[in-house]
Amino acid sequence: MDGMNIKNCRYIRLDTIRDGNDGVLSIANGNQNIPFDIKRVYYIYDVKHGESIRGKHAHKALHQVLFCIRGSVEIVLDDGEKRQTVMLDKPDLGLYMLPGLWHDMRKFIEGTVLLVFSSDYYEESDYIRDYSDFLKHVLKDKKNDPVQ
Ligand code: T46
Image (cartoon, rainbow, N blue to C red; front, side, top):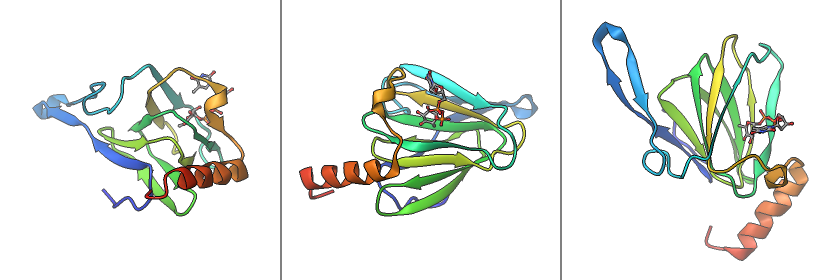
């Protein structure tokens, strides 16, 4: 697990139960190892291998944890000051993304399934889909909370 050098995100490792040759069971509990009440679960799959880039937005209030439960995908994270690319390719290793984090998902290999636990229902008004609006949003937050 590489170090995380940017704000508003961290890894979450799920507890797993290994059953010899009979497989592994990974457990996600809302308000426990997933640090919010899970209101919505969605998953992304059948992404064309190659140039597809999803995401390209930030959220104002939504908390999410991403798990790549099959295959692999790169997540590019940007907190408005720094940018980091992380690879998700382990079913028990989640990426917790807090509000105020620009992200995109790219380099899906064939057969990848990206599972997302979300703290709220889908609400388009929670999305910031323009990068310059995101930078303004981050700057506004910093002025309100200068110790960040
Ligand atoms: C995120 C990343 C990781 C809905 O109607 N309901 C839903 O619950 C979701 C997630 C999406 N939609 C609609 C909105 C768009 O018309 O489905 C369409 C595709 O959504 P979007 O382009 O936002 O998909 P991604 O893969 O770019 O982003 C998704 C989530 O939307 C987003 O919150 O953080 O996965």
